[in-house]
Image (cartoon, rainbow, N blue to C red; front, side, top):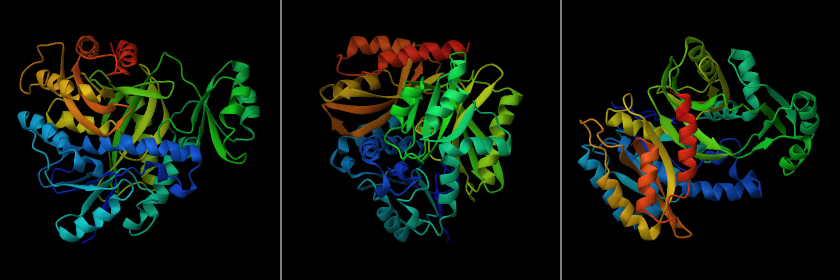
Length: 438
């Protein structure tokens, strides 16, 4: 029996093995080729990924398997509490959890597959050099590498006719001159983007040629980069998720994205995010591009498009052919049957370790109650915990259903200033984004 491996969404009809290892840093190149800066970013990413894999638990079925960072094996009380909360919601997740060292989940994958012949679907964060020996060939890795490349966006938009901001492909050495030529005369700012690590890594906001030279000084002069026009506040940032199979393309979901100065503050799921026919056509064209470039499989692969939009226009800024950080939140909302009917904000913040017990009690006191209308200003769904405590704080994942501002006010009454350090800015971004959704 052949095994299908890749960033595959939850499938209701068959058991799956989720092996969501911290391997996004090796989507574009082998990890041994990362710069020192890249290696430092990757160390932080390992900690961040632990909570991402944990947050998949509410999306799993009892017959599924899930691999977690081995750090959780020594903290069984976290998983026990999390499972007890979702039992109250009648969400029964897998108890077939195994543990492995980050970057080495693939070893555990091989063992689990050998012991369980019923498994033929393995969901990974992405296609990467780290786990390429799990694949029969490198076809999907090469396709993924191409469509994920920041520098490929302009080429794909021209070939498949979808709209993007003004984007100039150049080299690091030529970037300051091209900026002056293409943007500075119009007083525009840009994002300088270089291939490599995902997310906001390798991305710099640039308002002058001098800043451009400094922002790119750690890259080789002949390395390709793009200069992408920075979009103004009349637009709001969104993410649109598709599932791409060999013979089908399916639009799955949308959410607004709260970011400022490369810092992510959360995502807003809201039924008021509605696409015009033109906006949907642009996204469909981008999804078709990904499929035609080889990113597709027998079971649908996940891909997300970052885009700025207003009432009529959409400008696609990035293609992320992988699992997205917000996707487990979507599937948790779907599991409870409320994805299409509530406004919900998913976020990750930090709680002081000496307030962790208080945090758990607060979540239970404000837990969402399925089957009844939301009678209070907000309700909560936990999304998990980081397995790591850094400087006395632990990252926690949370979905706030209802008004984030009311949740923020309650947090400031219940917790010290050492917890929820991002929430003030999250609320400010929430107000800005929701004002665009009226």
